Image (cartoon, rainbow over all chains, first blue to last red; front, top):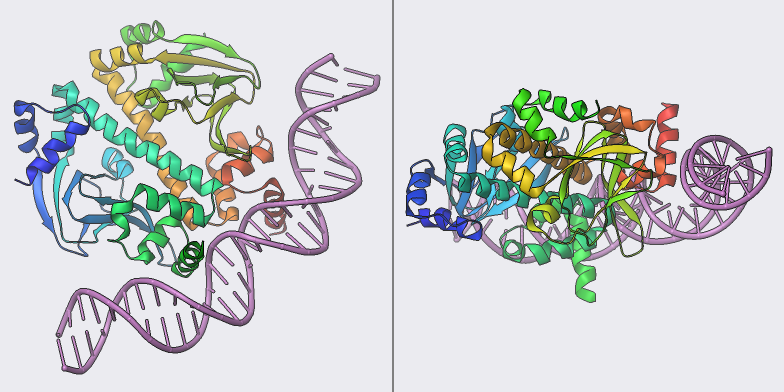
Length: 193
Length: 193
DNA sequence: AAATACCCTTAATGTAGCTTAAGGGTAAGC
DNA sequence: GCTTACCCTTAAGCTACATTAAGGGTATTT
């Protein structure tokens, strides 16, 4: 059963017992998403936390020139949310789009708050999920202000080896904040070393 | 009383009643910090959430060349924490240093968890504090991968006007990820427009 | 099987931002 | 009130990265 990918995801934090698993399973909805399908578009309000059970997504913003800038990739076992829009019910400034055919589980705010309120274990678990993403973001800010494109690419390879073969380099370049042409040069230079 | 700056800070979220204020006041410690004094150093474990009542701090990382990279400024009314070190009890990779003589309130993990557990209002309030910082970080990542130094400087001026006059440009340049010399050029170019 | 849409690479040229060096200004500490 | 340390600016030369253009390769769609 694919929902076990969600339920056992919490084994990384405080594992759930049978009753808790049942509670959570009853509060999420399963969706199959096609390649290129969006689960969040600009100006919509983000209504769910999303868990990726299968497949891969990109979260990105589009600038006034129409260029996409990737903020995050999320594959199996990762969580996706647009915090600003979800909690403050503001229109989203980002898109979330499937890069591969995917299966996700989504939980809405009333159900999430029910879990927070009625069981401290869920509260703690979801807190850790946000904290982990927080740490990732701080690292990325640091890299952005202190590292070269080559260093950022090497760091990407190291931290996301499972994504390397699944993403076109154009998407990785967008994530790193460089052009595909320059990424191509970086890769060439690295291969010579 | 200076502690009111802390207690009334929650008026921005879910305001505290008298009993809650008393509870919180009993769980924080007040500290006076001198200019240039550190409240967190690399390799120490971060033991507290810190609220800045007066003064100003910078949180930064030092690279292998010894160059500082500013991740955050925090002035009156701001919260400071090193999430990775605080929650996972890992050695910190950042420093937090006072830029001005300051007064802070600090809460340790047992007391914070007590508040989380015994009163959902604290839980919600501290969640929002982290979420706000989270949103700030995502914006900064986006800017880093999609904007020029001039655009980032203009955004800094817009979002942190109260910090502009208090910070030397060297510190702002470090925050923006550029050299002080180049910031000087950016400012000159802007003044011509 | 053909057609279309991506995708990757290379190379020439242009620009944003860094480095080094230097001079003068201003605030902090004694 | 002096001194020292830091800070801001300018400018010349350099490097990292962007832009434009072009050709060939590989999926996906029809």
